[in-house]
Each structure stands twice: as C-alpha cells, then as structure tokens.
Amino acid sequence: QRVKSTPRDAAAAGTQVHSDEEILKERRRIERFERADDILRLMSWGLTVLAAGWFLLFFPVAPTVTSLGGPLGEAGGDAIFGLYGCGLFCGNLSRSGPRGTWSAWRKVWHLVWAPCFVLAALAFARFGLLDTRVRSEMRTPLPPSSYGVVVAVACGVLGFAMLLACPRGNPNAARPSQVVWGRVLLAGDGVVGLTLSLARLRSGMAVSFSEPLGLSTLWVSTVPLAMWSLGTVLCRSDGELIAAVPAALVHYLLVMCHLVYSDGVQSALAMLLMALLHAALYLPLPWHDPDSNPFHVCLRKHLR
Image (cartoon, rainbow, N blue to C red):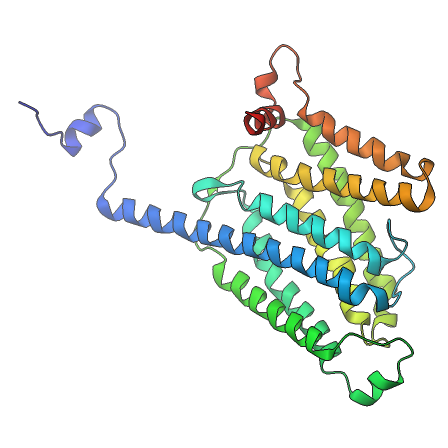
C-alpha cells in the first residue's frame, strides 16, 4: 500500500516544503515578469515598425540636427539602424530570462523606457499638430500631420504599457557569465554607443526646436541608441549576452554593407573587423571544452 508523505517526512528527507500560498505567490511573481517580457517583445516590434516608417516617410525630409552622424552620414539616417538594432536587442532580451530570471538592472532599465516613450510622443505630437501655415511655408513637402499623430499615440501607449508592466517583487538572480571576452567586447560597444548618443543630444538640442521634425529626429537618433547601449553595457548573464551579440553583429554587418555601397571597401574594414570579433564568440572555444562557451552552445542548438 502506498503511504502518503507528509511535510514532516519531506523535512526529514532534506527537501524544501512550500505551502500552497507560497506556491501561488511564486507563480504570480513569475507571471508578472513574463508579462513584462511580453510587453518588451511588443515594444521591440514597435521599434522595428518605427524604423521602417522613419525610412519610408520621415527620413527623406528629416533635418540635420547634428553633425555627429553615423554610417548614413547624418544622425537622422543612422537612426534607422539604431531603431532596428535596439528593437532586435529588446526582442532577444525578452526571451533571455525564463521564469522571472532577471538581473537587477533590468527593472530600472525597463522602467526608464516609459519616460523615453513619453518624450517620443511629445516630439511626434509637435510635428502632428504643426500649424498649417508653417507647414505651407516649408520648402520641402512634409509627410501628412496624421502620421505624426499616429506615432505619438503609439509611443504614448507603449510608454504607459511599459510603466504598468514593470514587475513588482525581486527577480530570480541571474548567474554572472564567465565569458569575460564577450562581456568586455559588448561593454566596448555600449560605451561607444552611449558616447555618440550623448554627444548628438548635446550638439543637436538647440537646432531641434527650430525644425518641425527636429525633436523627432533628435529622439530617434539618440534615445534608442542610448538605451540599447546602456543595456549592452549592463548585460551580465549568459542569456543577456547571447541576446545582445546578434543585435551588435547585425548592426555592424548592415553598416559595413552600406559603407561598401557608398564609399568603397576600404571604408568598411573597421566594421568588418568588429563583425568578425563578434562572430568569433560563436567558435568552439576553448578547444578542450567547447560546451563551456554559451555562445557556441546556443548556435549549435539552433543549427540542430
């Protein structure tokens, strides 16, 4: 006859006993973090759509708010790569922490997105509510004002969603990664991105208020790049590093292709070197124990 075990038997056997209330509380905590990851994934799609919309609708008439450009020669053009890279990073990051496994920095980083999208809503609302007389005086025809209103509303909704979805409680602490080279490489990427975005913000602030699309251009060329770079610097677990590397690698490859097309092969050598350094993380190294390399393990799992 089967004997039903009791909490006292479990305690005697050395196993941890959880009450129904504790199990339910843990399940709700996990659901809150999973919901936050779902909203982050939705936000990643929103950034990707904004990148496509900026390229098709706004980029041809976007002003040059700062001389500190990027691979497209100006900040407004480089924003396309920044938006897409940030969206890819956020989408990967939303899948990196199963069952509420977040590093401590992610809650604050998640919450900061809310005011960032509020600023985006204000910037695009300024363009959408532009006076008809001012619009008619512009030498270059501007996109319809309704486009700016739609983007402003979408950004406002995303900001509110990010604020509401910020999970309460403490996450399960993620183990720090032992891949030192990967952390150093991504930290370098992040420092460069933060430096560029902050320099653009400083040099473009004064000019932005005099152009109808100035504030919008300044936002798309600085904020996504800054948030992406900040997240890249703060990545510390294997899952977070695995989420960050593809976005950086794709970004370098896109920049390299554009530089080859516009300025020739020699101008793209630096981007090629950076892409190779990031791709090298996926090699089966160290040779004697390739399973200790989480990047290689992840690649091998996807190729099966």
